[in-house]
Length: 209
Picture 1 (tube, helix red, strand yellow):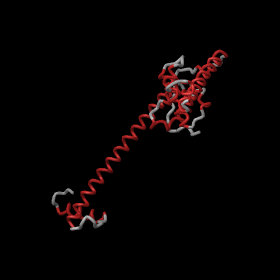
Picture 2 (cartoon, one colour):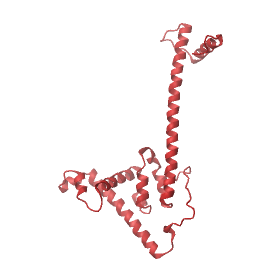
Picture 3 (cartoon, helix red, strand yellow):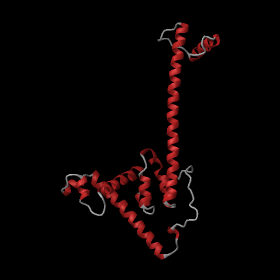
Picture 4 (spheres, helix red, strand yellow):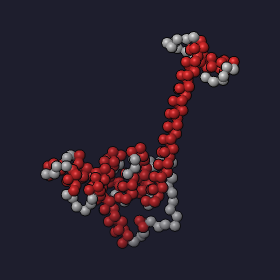
């Protein structure tokens, strides 16, 4: 399992009490039931994933997977499809489903709803979710999203800068060929190009390439 990313800040919740830490048999039972609910939902998600990927519904007399889940009770059509998606993301991340039971399905669902470019942080966020409420998890996700957007913008700027630089260099190279009378099939060292452009600039023709 990956270590928790040290760059992800865990934001403390001030003046709040986590009910998970209350030392009371009744609360222990509540926590047990909540964990059981999460465990059941995760198990259901993987069972539906198996039905979908194995096309098991055909053996049960249904024309499509959609028609099969419409026959199920308790949850909506969209919820069952969401469960299948969650199971796929968990399986793809390589995370052991049994380690997710004490997180709470709402936090787990929030983590697994991340965009594909952010799903590399799933393991780190799961570790944060185990010992922190949803509010702290949301804060960490917000930090990751902002950092990812900044990195993405910087990458775009870097690509555009290189494209501009390449275009300027092409202009300089073509002008140098005209100055020294070289054909397009002749390789001109970068040093020669720079010297030719500098010489023309010093001569004061127009100071541009």
